[in-house]
Image (cartoon, rainbow, N blue to C red; front, side):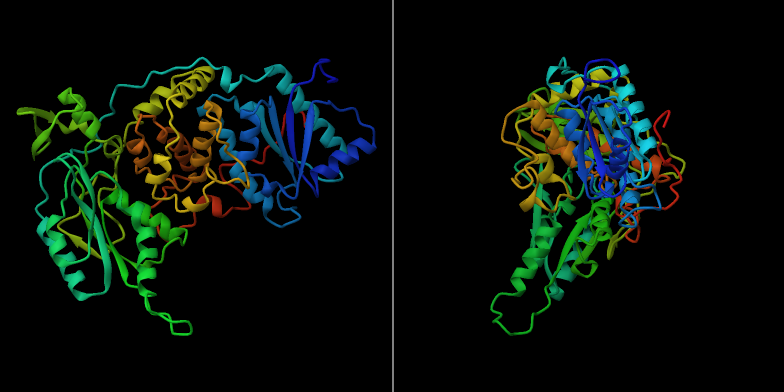
Length: 508
């Protein structure tokens, strides 16, 4: 039983083999009195502790989780704890958004010779957890189904009219296709009605005539680029015999808005695509719309839309013979409300003039984040439980994400490791969303495709927004997808972190 209260709580400890586990052993050899609540898991290095380990433990019923490793600058593997420090600090600040008290998680440093310090660490942390009491269980939370209805203001005026530079863009693409060095160019074309667009794969100059540009260019073209590059590489190998020299693959062209180009830049940062394999066509974006909000204005999701026209910030939609006039203020996508990069920074061809935003423009917080910030921890847990009850596990959020390039080996489908089971439980479904969010930490460009693609309207993008807020604070305003030469924050470290303290537990 616990030496603190006589009743044990469930506390999990991840201890580095070379230092902290040795420190715990030293304390045991010295017969130092310690609480018995802690269940130790021995790991090779604190850098081996994926943030999903503590998160899984907390969601599975642990009342507290402690990670302990070598002191910074004294790692057995030189830099493992430097990487761990960034990841674990991210996790600690991420926990409140899902309703878990961050005091239930801690990380610290104990060397093999510090038996007394280990005793102080484990006693202080166990005392903290006993004061908090048993952790609330996600499966027992009272579900909340409310969603914020208010929209945030626009950071700049949006325009739903045609772009006068579209003909120039089309000619640039025709010239590139006629040159013969492109496998194809991906853009947008009208879908089954005027308010829906679908991908357009332009392989011949005459295909370019179907290209559209405007408020309905909603989905991200960056989502398709890795698959198209592979397709181009496979096409180059057709007819090549073993031993023959490998011919160079043709480039893949992609038409981008500002937000799409951020996805490409992030892929370039992580060397997931080769800059020489893509040719980028860009034009300034005046904003895109939410088709769901348009249909809500019409009042009939089954209405047949026959015509659309736009001028300035006003869109006129003809549905079932009736005209509906609506403002971009009411129907714009949330990401467009806060977008400060409407024009691509990296491109090979640019049509027209770039669209700019005032440097001093400050976007309002997204409505969903303001709503979550207003809730208590218990209410946030209930909110996510209520949302996950509606999840149908279609994985549309993952499939629409430009940064999810490992779909063939996704942890959602993997059995080794077996992170996510096929059990249809809210906890299981929620854990997949947490995996997605933490995998995108420091990488999510805020394209909003996960929210847009969800067929039941779950605001899963809020989890990525939270990691984005944390990354900006910890790494001096770092913005993914804006600098192809930058190193993503969780692929590097600083010996002296400016905004991350070297954590120590109270009284230890």
